[in-house]
Image 1: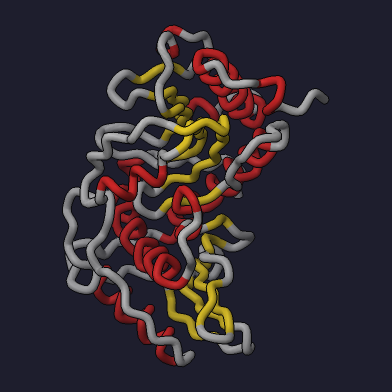
Image 2 (image 1 turned 90 degrees about the vertical axis):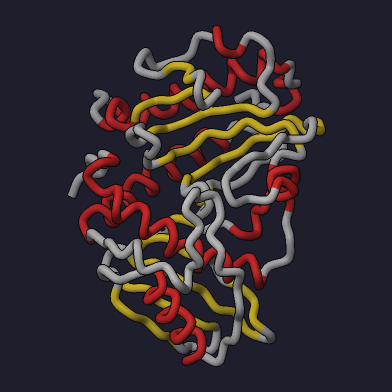
Length: 300
């Protein structure tokens, strides 16, 4: 089984669209149960040894966890009293998936109501009514998860040299990407927002501090899978900065640096390629923005 599998957007775009909406259901459950943490870190999912997990969430005096298992291809809900409920991950509509998740929660005595309007997608069909999206390709879902594992591993290596405030590698179900963020410690100007079906006040909280982020996005809008790096706010001169590897560059439309996933996975040393991208884009962004790198970075 390939450590760095092929993952061309056009080969699995229907499964991607469905899976994005499925993960929003789990993410919205976590949003409902967790207290707000800065930058919405309380809503994210995490790559695990078997798939994507919510991590433990509180419910009254116990905890429960939702896991997308991309090894055995099942959605499983486990609680802290040793009980489980599961169903197969297979082609089904978003509405059917929603109903099965709620049934699994009900079987464990968990009663939760969520806002069923999806976020950060242009076609916001309520999750409990969506019969349009219904694809699930086991092979590509597993490939996607395996890519997340690699990028998460390298993101944590990249983060290890940073002493300031930083996130862990986490998965945002709205934008459907894995992100790792570092902060200068300074406040940022109000973000203009403008993301589809996402209130601007959500974006204001997400970008309330100067932030540099790297991560992985599986593609869309005519683009194949990409690794990305961006800073907010964008400092003057960043577009002209020299970064590595040579296959990476500035994308004016998205206003960030991009490295095609295909270029990274087919590199002689994919780990080195990805870490070069993360480290060189960080250095360029931090220098252009005047971050106090002496205070923020480990010397060794």
